[in-house]
Image (cartoon, rainbow, N blue to C red; front, side, top):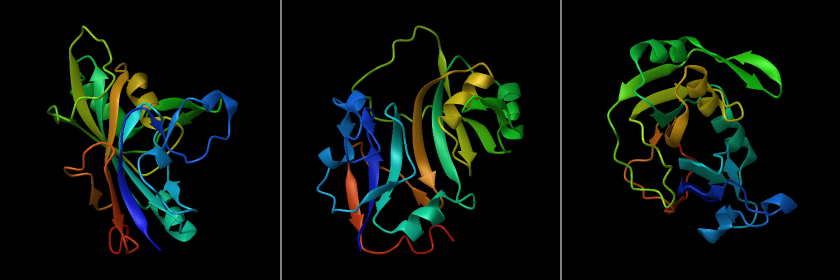
Length: 190
């Protein structure tokens, strides 16, 4: 069974089938590559998020990768110059809303980083204020969690790129690029 590594570009949703009428005009993953039937995304990146996405037909592997034992690292461009106080709050957990309920995120690793100089997106967010970048590594995955976390400390997310899942890094994989691999990501998530 083949597995795939994808740099999901901005503007695509992490699914293969149009199953809702409101998503009629959305770009789907099958438009990027001829994936075999039964392939599914492991976890999700929303339409406005980019970066590393793993795909498989193996449900057990999907469960393993989505577990809390596997770290996911995101590089996040935020509106404004994020400071060490906000980063420390991110690390210790912040209160966000999940399905109408208050939720405090688990402790995570967060740090200021220089601009990673990713390729420009096809859509640019207009912003006249300065921006800055932070790395956030979590091992949970609530709906739009990272975006909600940065907003909770006063620095809304402008761009979000997942750069690492476990020991697998996005490296120089360009947006839209798919790599097929024949193993089960041996050693990457253990």
